Image (cartoon, rainbow, N blue to C red; front, side):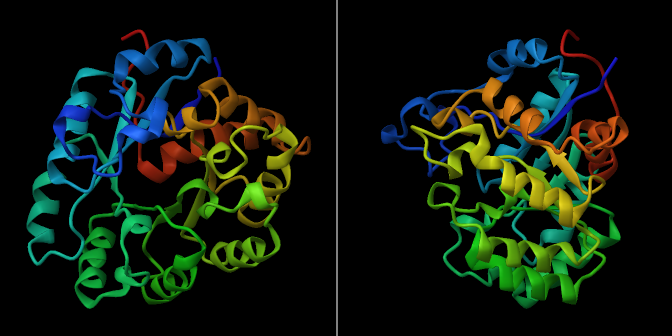
Length: 286
């Protein structure tokens, strides 16, 4: 049976108060999204498990996500949040690493005003601890962060990182040339990986076509190769521009015909297992 891992999805519960970016004018997103909402979609697409990614810059939300990991065996790992600028980062990291569900960390760089925040001396020192503990870093970035990430990788080439959502290209504007150059530069670092996720929300939400995404997906596969790419739905954020079905269909229909069965398996499951050191815990029916 083919194993599929959704390497990028979220849950949130509004009453927790963690999600300052979620406001009443955000339509379908302004409601709770919890495992019972995602489970039928995973069953429909025969997805074995997921990587649950933080959506709030709080330690409390990370603990909430890890509690969901304990309840649902199809959550294979949690990408949480710790304050990378904190002097007590190592102490918190050592504590949270005791939890078997922690698969990585993600600072919400796109929401931080300072574009080069990640290059602060204290942040760099804390990232060195992530290297020592073999914990990867998710990068939620767009084009304004590229130069800083290039400097980061020159400084810490052993840091395992994965770019979320192709660094958010402006697909709605057909903007691709500058983005290609930026991604080419990032792909030169062997420890930089990329998620095929979050595409719909970068396109025109009202009239995107599957063909709009092909040049972006093809370029990522060309420069990163099929061994450094993973599929992610970005559910429920994707609902602002489409459906879970659309998120799956876009990747299935836009992958180059030249990819072998093994290469497709890498993109849909093997690479996520390798990058996050995931173990299959159970099924969506568990």
